[in-house]
Length: 343
Image (tube, rainbow, N blue to C red; front, side, top):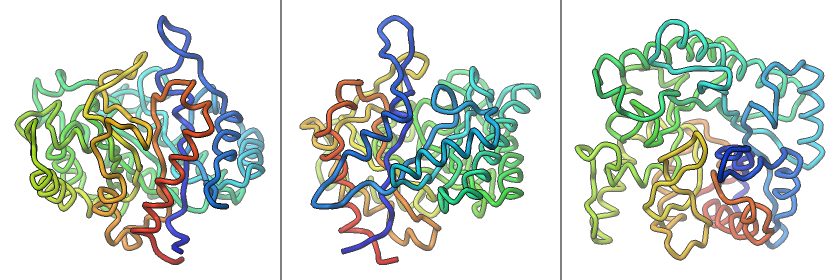
C-alpha cells in the first residue's frame, strides 16, 4: 500500500464564507476542525496532517512566536503535521490586491512575509516538514482586470516576483491557486500566462484544485478559453482534461482533492467561485480518482509530498457530520492507492 503522498485536511472550511452577516453561519474553531479531522478513520487509516489559513479567528497573523508554538503543540498533539499555509493576502486581512497601487501591493507583500515568518516558526518547532505557501491575486472578480488585461497581468506578475523573492529568502515556495474568482487567474490560459510572465518555477508554482479547475474547462469567467461545451461527451471531457493538465501540471506544486457539480457558489465576501461538494455527491461531475491522476503524474519530481481535501464553504452541519470526513478520507485513500508511491 502506498504511504505517500501524505493525506491532509484543510482547516479553512471552518472560516471561509463564515461570519456574523445576514445568512452566514458562524466560524468553526481551529480546535473543533482538528477534532473533526482526527475523528475520521477508514480501515485503520487516518488523516496525517492539515493545511492551514493564517488569519483570525484561527490564528492572529501578529501572534508571537510563543503563541504560534502553542498552536503547533495543539496540532501536533492531535497527531498531525502542518503542510501548506494560506497567506492572508486579501483586503480586510493583512494584504491587498496584487494589481493595486503601490500601497496595496506593499500590503500584499507584507502578507507573504507573515506567511513566511509563521512557516519558519512551525518548521523550527518540527510540526511542519513540507508544503507551500498559497497565494492568489487578491483581486476579486475580473471586471477591473479586463480594463487592461495585459497590463494588469504584468502588474500581478511583478508583485508575484517580489513575493517569490521573499519566499526564496525564507526557503519557501509559493503556490498560486487557480480559481475563477481571482483576476488574472480565472481561466487555465490566463493562469498559464501569469505563471510564464513570472517565470520563476523553482519558487512560484501552481496549486491545482479539482473543483476549481473543472470550471476552467467550462470557461465560466472566460468563455474564450472554454475547452468544453454543455452536453459534452465522456471522450470530449477526457480530451479537454488532458489538454488542460498537460499545460498546468508542470507548474503544479500543491494539489487539492475535491468534487464539483458544475455550479458556482459563494457566501459572505467570498462569492461566485467553484462549488465544492461532498466526495459522494450524486451531482458530482468528476471521477475524483481518475482526475487526480492527471495532476499527480510525476508528482515527486515537483516536490509534492502531500495532498489536501478542500471542503471550502461546506455548510456547518455537513462539517460537523462524522460521515462527511470518513467518506472524504476514503476518497483520499483511493487517490493515493491509485497514484501514490512508497516514501
